[in-house]
Length: 222
Image 1: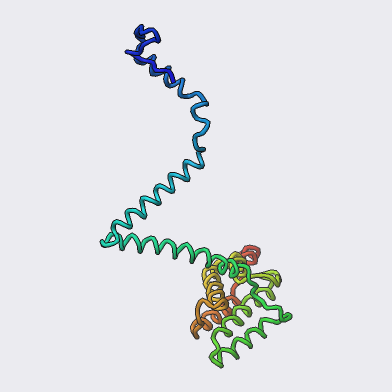
Image 2: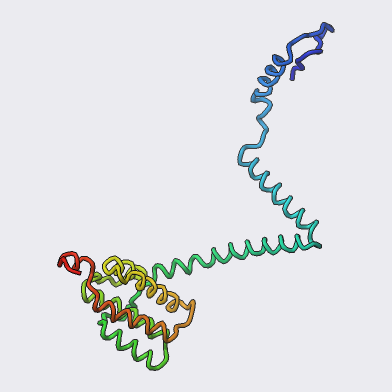
């Protein structure tokens, strides 16, 4: 690269007196020549190198601090991040399965009264998981029989609760809680208790007396 600037000499020894700013600009222009950069790493490669350097710095610092409380805390933080990432990756399919699982089993059409009867039988025997599942199905089937909900075999508990909550806004929160209870128990995240069944049965009775919002608006009375 040409050596420009004050104090430079020509081949014959004649001094060159180029102003400093002009020499700097000329050098900058020369360095922009692609021939000097044809082997430079690309932007992606530079980013990868930067992350690699930061990771090296992190683990080098951890290695030098393993005998101190700071090193222990940093190690625990790293382990926590890894565990959280693994839990999220493994937990996501379970959450997806919950959101797409059908409320009604493929055991043929059953009425709300039949579901209620089955729920009571399970409750009398202390089988609270089964009682909760059957009672939630009774609740939704009763709403279908009243045409508050359309009949849809593939509906999930969450979908049923959301749709019923729009028609019966005063009970929207209780319906959402009922769907969450059904999901938690039906998919093994927790074991049902007598109170879970009683709450669903009480909600079922309350919904029987509730008037859908559209019917109330059409009648003009509350």
